[in-house]
Length: 269
Image (tube, rainbow, N blue to C red; front, side):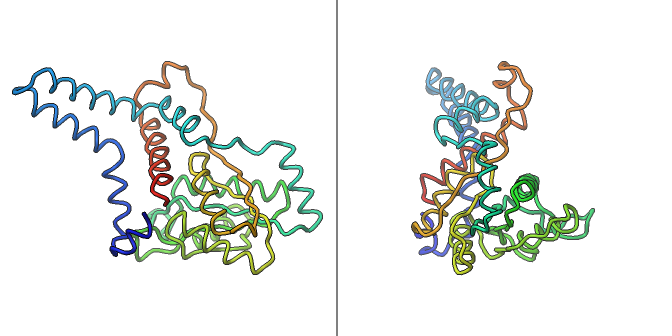
């Protein structure tokens, strides 16, 4: 799909296609189609309206996101205590291992700071990556430039480096600041690290994003660099099962994120 968009010269349209393919747009269209059919074909019209409304409800429920992550995306589990201990041992032995945090978006200009700021998902990833670096002693890098359709902003990795140094007191060792999507994250990060002798990357991103990220990095590495998943954002919060199936802003965000990843996997993005 990326190659097709590049061939047509419309790669910058990817965010638009994403919005059109993901909820609520498809379900809103169903509601409109059903409403139009109610007069000439009452039964069919109401069925389509109810289908659209049900889709809107499910697309805003945490329970739907949990099912998508568990059964469709098959998100990996968080690193265990033993795995973190093994990484710490590798760092002490001087093995060429790097922690790489993947970008998740940025605010081109945050008025309260007067500079580019990381979006909430990016800050969450950066925090975990820096924590993992502190716990293991491994060096940390960040991959993220300007997303498709963005311009006149500081590349995401540069903003992350500033925040890591000034606010967390832990400077980044690497900045990959030219990638525009997950596929380019993999290609350009591997191109940056492989000449430096890195043979293993501990990849940090949200759990739902991890399957596509690992695929992109393994394709770029071509077997020459090992990729270990270090997912974060896997907690479900303190909620009752009933609330998981009630529409909420959080539920809509989680479902949209999961469906975005499924579309990306299917399209080879």
